[in-house]
Image (cartoon, rainbow, N blue to C red; front, top):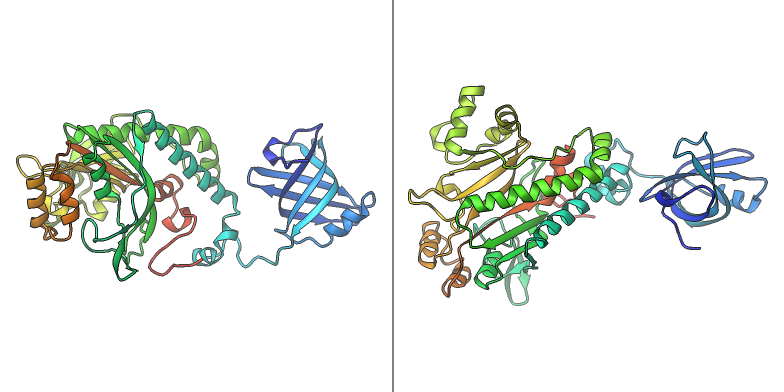
Length: 429
């Protein structure tokens, strides 16, 4: 008999299930086991006198042991889990578990030491299913709009983007670096005439940040597309994409997220509100008395970013806020600038946290080269500048961190929403 997922179990049938022993009450004449697989839980009720061989096996079991059980599925109104139970006539012990080294309320770093055990919790399995649905929805939206999925290299020959905060690795007789983002190769795809591309893959940042939203390795979801006429085209693509994906997440997991994490998935309406950075600082001061020195007003401070959650809801009734018109010295050299030298890009803030930096890119070789020289990066990005010497369409794009989105969906830290977290002090398991 083939194994059946517990969610598919129906009374009046015979089934074979396999999973972890989550609970065990081993009485003199009866044994009650709660078996958990990735889809749900089922009570298994054993009459020990009727099946002494099975009873002997149950006597060996510990919590979190793994077993396979076969039997009849019957309705029982006294069983809390769905009103059904299994009456087994066959049982196989797959693995006996030692006493667990962590509990649900253990410290986060202890949980990270034994992450494979921590991932058994329902909260973590819902978290991973959320990420699966989210990524699938992002792909689905873009594939329906003629995007092509690509996979760019993560070993690169020159430090990308800023030229700092990269991991250096030995590469045969030379040096290589782990990619900070697929940005340069996304733009190469535009020069290649691929028109619309996206990628989901690992991103590496060699920064010693110990905040609840930073990791040295995370999963990015990036896209780039050609023939944009302004930054507004990029912003519109992102808001439509997120509204679509959030609707899918809400339908598939909204109830579980609210039950387990106390967070409601709010599907956003389009368009998202937009505000220039200077106007945002003025409004934050008027509404909340938040003031910063003029010297830092070219970028968004962490405190201002957090205040955006309150401001955006009170002003616009939206959890999302596009912030535009940053100072050129605070933006990447490849952002296109308008006639006044203002970068044609944005940050997208959700629930008081930046989830995206997007922009229309500079595609003109001479302008791009000059902007790289202005940042002192011309030598570092020589290979990248070559992409634009032989014709390149106007284009733009953005990147999302899937882990950060999950973190904000659930109200957790970045450590808790990655399959395995990597940070300055964490390289195992």
